Image (cartoon, rainbow, N blue to C red; front, top):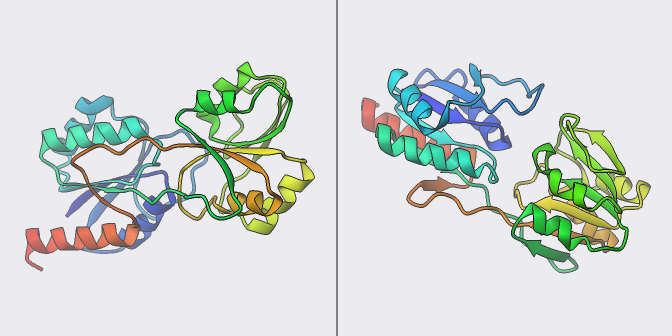
Length: 250
């Protein structure tokens, strides 16, 4: 059964490992190409955009894709919308892996905001030492607040930076002791992050809680309506196995 997985997340990599070597499936993993050196994958990969909804429809039809898995990042809202529209047009079964978001725990000091612009504004006008873990695509709003000192962590070095910024290039997962040391070493006063959910980068929240730091949390966009969703790669694999039995009878 031909499967196209839209990847770039921990769940996509987990699903790729489950599909690799399984003779029931012929799977391809699609990566957006925003990371210069993506982690090695056990499946054939394609990299880059499809060319909007029409391009994805053409790919699904031309390659006779029998199942589409949206395992993109919870903040890749446009790609998820395109996947939903293309799947409807091509009549390709679609499943989204939508990991649960984070929720504040006792001792947390969160301020939830709707956008990255609102996150930059929430930092206020008094200079603060800020740990930014929002991804290199979302740094522009912070350029309007150059009085803060920013520590930015990114997989690749960002092309443009706010003033007064220091960059750490690193790829998760991260441990709580390491995050605790990092926050102390750089005298961080506030953490700004997206509500990505999952465990790969959640240790920073535990470290911030332990130190009593403020957290500005950017709320995730809602997923497309009418799309079946699961929370894990294991559930997505079970869904694919069920579809395989329906189509192949075994």
